[in-house]
Length: 328
Ligand code: NAI
Image 1: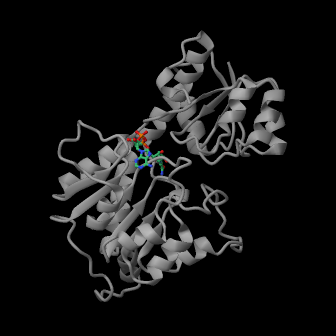
Image 2 (image 1 turned 60 degrees about the vertical axis):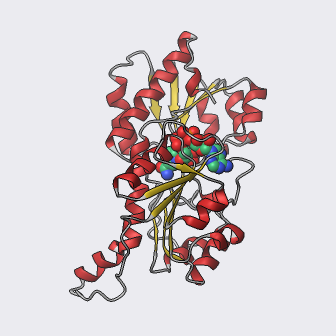
């Protein structure tokens, strides 16, 4: 099995090379470049490519890959909304992913964002470094005794729900398929979760029917001074409506690990560039907003699980023993 690994960062190479010690027959070549029309042709002679969540796996690129002989897409992530699945099926390509590498990694980042915006840690950090020890503008609120609303209670949402419970919060949730194992959660309709929560955290996948599920209408249902966190997918939120809500002082704080315009930013150092879009810049201009760069997954434990499962997926495919749970 020969795999061409796109968009390889040093931490990817380190983690995959360590995991590869247990998979000696799998060859991996690492490319710093991400996949695009020009780099897709480099996959000639490889059985599989390995890509990340923001990779462009649109129809056109998939066709180029297929022409090079690629039969397997190894996604080193859980999400797959970036892949044209109709086209992979038409081309007879198999797509395998890593559905649950470390739900706690993402949930802990969601809570870190919630706590940071609530207590203004991002402001405090800078103020104190400047010898400014005043408390002006730093007032937070206890999460203890408040209500957390979790949208989507799969692996990550369940982990977030457990963290919120540990903080002494009442946990309510909306999910199309309630998780019966989470007996401490009160399930209700989305509208009711939004109306009753002091902290709203998104943990559902992006699907055709929930694009912009957080919009002017659903934001208006939320409590005033709510803390809103999105570690799931940017397109779940209508960012213009979110910005309008922030401007109208609807939110006590907003923590975003994902946002609609992130694709060109994710994992890139763009320090020297002039930003061409205004959404990111506007989000960053608000004192009660924290944006991180799709890093919720980024823990040692998660990277190790991602590399091991990706290589297991490759081996399983080669042996004709595909892990159905990882098949997209
Ligand atoms: P999962 O598949 O275990 O759970 C998703 C849950 O959402 C399921 O219970 C499902 O019934 C529910 N759901 C589906 N559509 C819904 C809707 N319209 N409204 C409410 N609930 C709905 O997925 P998991 O592992 O918990 O991941 C959730 C999402 O987190 C992923 O789809 C991905 O978008 C995001 N993610 C973000 C990462 C990051 O680094 N920021 C890393 C990994 C995942």
